[in-house]
Image (cartoon, rainbow, N blue to C red; front, side, top):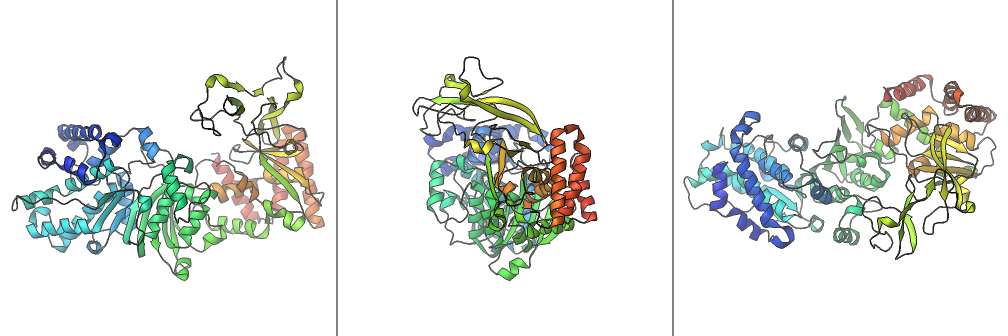
Length: 637
């Protein structure tokens, strides 16, 4: 390590790199940052013996990547989160490169690999190590010291022609260049022993905005760990570029990583391979549907591996996704996707089944799940489509735009109240700072004695399945708060966003009682079928069948029961009772639901009866009933 530090100082590598990458030290505090890098290198050098004792110090060992570790060490969590960047663990890097077939047995010396969010170079460095091993085999050498000077120079030339990286952060680019020099240092020393005036070139690590990449240039491999930033956290200048460019996946509430995935696919050659680690929100979140369609329509999905959280500062649960660029529709549809879940048996599914799942990547489904979901999705209308066929009109909406605790704050500029922001105390309307002294409660245990009673309404505060557990009161006189139409809050079903023991949690309230946004209010405005009423619908929602359907359709990639969203409720399969037999079953469901609402102590055996009736209505076979009930039991074990 000391030899390499001496090389950096003698050749003024960092100073030259600052000029090469045009680092503005004032903007990036570059001198301070780069001095910390040198200090960190020194600390690694001083601790070299300790390091050797604890881990391998082999230059080509994936377990030791000095500069990536330094980069991670020199950026605090807030900085990393702001940029959406996190150091990629070495085993993940190695797995992705293996999965895209970037290995020394392939003809990779003639191929091009790029990481469009390269950071300090985790993927690039491991790719170079593999490329060196490939070249050693080509030259029929066991180790670097057996190479000729021309062969060593040839390897360096191949690295420059084959490996590419982009990052918007110039400091990261400098570190990546240094990292490459460190990886090639043994080759450099071999050459210098014969040609003392030889200098390593600067490599194809470019400091510019990836969003501006030339999509006409194509690559054989695209790998990496793209930045994870939700739309509201993407810097405004970046968002403006995205919104004014020709992207196809930036519709709605997009995430930065999906733009990077679209770009990665666009710059692939036909037959080229992409390997990314991304949030598992890609699998089933409705906001990622447009990206899933884009992937489905432009690539063979070779592998989806649900790894769970994979970062030292875990912000999300992750998947590794491996794609092959393919324009031919028949080739894509005949492709089989390898599905892997950590510590579970590997499966495979035909790619064309994703169309039937409305482009959700439901990777946790087995053959029984697929058959049951197909039956529910094809034989029954979705809740949102009932009006088209049966003239049933429903109202579905969240409660008052307010946190559950009911704290609000007054903006003196807008002269309005708003829910107290979770992060910065700024008005979302005029963007002016807010004073915490102007905050107050809007939800009360009881109506204050000095208050005007007409300004207060009942506020449903908490529920469990079939039961309201607490009411409070809400002040409805605060200008600026979106209370919604009061008609939403009367004679309706209330659905909690969060589950209860891995089951959908819903109840009924005839009273006029407002709710927070943590609850959905579902009301039947019109139904020509008397048996299709609130009590029947509540029985369906709280049934085992619906909890199973919800988890398998929307949440199987999560360890915990996912948050219920409105669009997921709208997609529930609804059986409208039409025949006399179906209506009789519906009446029995209604009767049992009413009994539970009147006497909660009878819940357990009455719920079993409701589940049996719902299974009958949906024509679920005996074997599949047992499977569903057993599956739900395992969630709570």
